[in-house]
Amino acid sequence: MSTPFTVLVCEDEPLARLHLRALIESTPTLLWIGEVGDGLNAVTLIDRLRPDIIFLDIEMPELSGLDVLERTTHRPAVIFTTAFDAHAVQAFELGAVDYLLKPFGPERFATAIARVARSLAPHAGDAPVAERVRSQQGALSRVFVRERGRIVPVQVQEIERLEAEDDYVALVVRGRRHLLTITLASLLEKLDGRRFVRIHRSHAVNLDFVSALIPFDAARLCVEMRDGSRITASRSGTQLLRSLTG
Image (tube, rainbow, N blue to C red; front, side, top):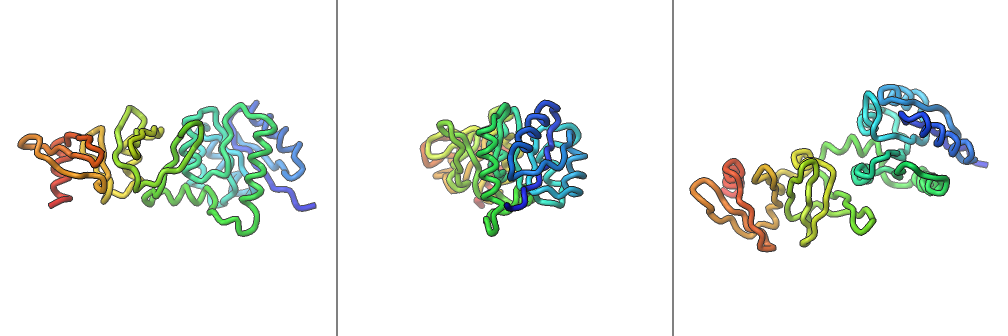
């Protein structure tokens, strides 16, 4: 029999830790090696114990699960756990092996473990999720969106424009709108600034999909998109457009 995968649980809810420990200890291919209830101690234990797998709650005291991954030097396989469905897109964007929405049962747990086992096989390919968190400094090439009950990738170059909606951003892609749980400013930090330009407090456009810039008044331009939609740029947005287009 092969050596079991070592597992560390990083979860702030005591009942959730008990539930996970019971599932882990009933799975012959897994070996429970510890648990922790806050982000700071999670960083310490991950680097000290060097588990093969961690169950990581996204929202914990001291540090979030994503902050934990930025600070660790060890790179385990990661299964995110959370009670909030809104985090699913971000977890998949970061390359999580799996994502468990609480409450979950033995069957869903077993599916996650099967995925982890495949990812830990020799030459599985993709970089660990902790490494992907660190690599988010570069421009994104894709984002993940919900569509008809699924989470699917969208290539960034296909996004025509972005619209801010409170703490969400609507992506307009081929006439369809997809919501992401992120602010417009935060998303733009992850996109190529040579392609995506914020022309208004609530709007950014992909220059590849701009068909014309039309004077609106003495200080502002109207941006006409290929789909026929028009957005009036703010004064600062107009200045930026003019500097980019000469």
